[in-house]
Image (cartoon, rainbow, N blue to C red; front, top):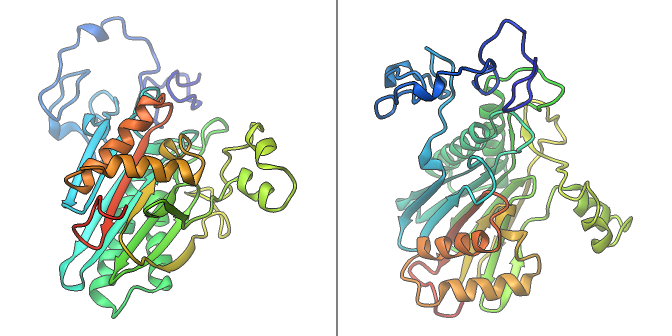
Amino acid sequence: MHCPACGTEAPAEDRFCEACGSLLVVDTDASQSPAGPTGGCTKCGAGPEEIDAQGFCTACGLRRRGRQREHLEMALTPHCGAVTDRGLSHPCNEDALALAQVNDRKAYVLVVCDGVSSSQAADLASQAAAEAACNALTEALYSHDGMTETAMHAAVDAALLAVRALPYTNSEDRDPPSTTLVAAVVCEGRATIGWVGDSRAYWVNGERVQQLTHDHSWLNEVVVAGDMSLEEARRSPQAHALTRWLGADADAHTAAAAVVQVALSGVGLLLLCTDGLWNYVPELAQLAALVQEATAQAPDAVTVARRLVTFACARGGHDNVTAAVLSLPAGRLSAGI
């Protein structure tokens, strides 16, 4: 027997999928079950105390997916904010984000993760990775004289451990919980960027856009190697296959982060985003125009992020979409961008 929701194989005697908590046996009375109280189980009515740390109801096995993840906005400061949205096609939001500020260092931490849809509990993987990386980077800022590439690598390692700690079921159809990650620490006009997978970081300065990351993807690797043209690679069914990710099935190479340090000179905007956004603006000139439009008369960074997410949804919203924005110098949004 296989789970109708996630495809995981399950013993015939089981009623609930161990991987996602979905009901394996059709319950004809399910529609008549009372709705649970706030924070409780909406299927069997169990209270919030019956929901475990992973969101499973210990009474009936249903996994709760928080509605707050469908659309979440975070305004850390007027010049640092982020928005994540389920989009229009996916049943849930498997993207996640985390932001932090270290005031005495005048430093900012931004993390964006995209759960791998072919894996189990992708939403939990992205959330665990984002929180672990953000916490590790914040602690590093408090304990070190400056942000180093070593500290970024350590933060990605912490994210990997957090994802690997999630429970999962061995399955031929569904991979263990997995996610991409892109993180940035900005301090005194210098950014340390770390990433695994195809979530990206950009520096946008007027009409000039610099992509600070390169995708860990099959498409990018065959194009860089000269084996295919970009147009040929985009037509391949392997185009979006990841070559690096964070998950229990990732080895030392496929979980290895790339890290760069760059100076962010002038007035501009640092953007971290998932492919739910950049797939709709594949050319840098298109992204520059989009950011210029989004920043026009925008009062704060979260408004800019919201406009970028709204753009992706208006173009079809075929994927979850997340944008995290930091304007530099602090407090400058539209001027010069």
